[in-house]
Image 1: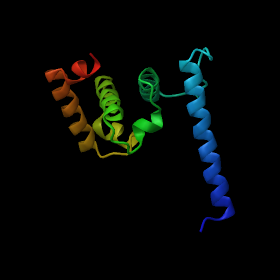
Image 2: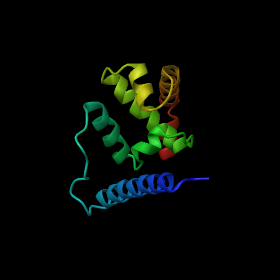
Image 3: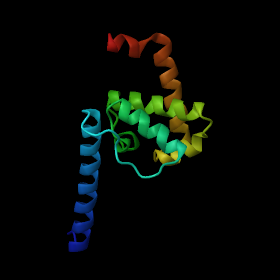
Image 4: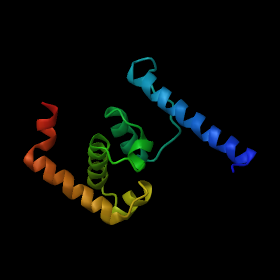
Length: 123
C-alpha cells in the first residue's frame, strides 16, 4: 500500500510531466514562442531539439516504449549524438540502456536507411 508521502510524490511527478507535455504541444501549435527549458548541456539540446521536431517527448525517447515510430526517432537521436562524438556508454547512461543496445540501434538505422525503409513509409 502506498503511503501518503509516496502518493504526493507520485502526483507531483505526474503533474510535472503533464506540464511538460502541454508546454510542448503549445509550442508546436505556435501558442508559445519558445518552450520553457532549464539550462541544458549540448547533449540535452540535441536530444530535446530532435524530440520536439519529431513530435515526441524526451521521456518517450528515454522510456521503454518499443513502438516503431518512437524507436525510429530514438535511433536517429542516437546517430546524431554519435556524430557529435558522444560515446556509446554516455548515450546509454542517459537513455537508461546498455552501450551495446546503442550500437545495435545504430546498426538498425543504417540498415533501414540503406534499403530506404523510412522513405517508403513516409511516401
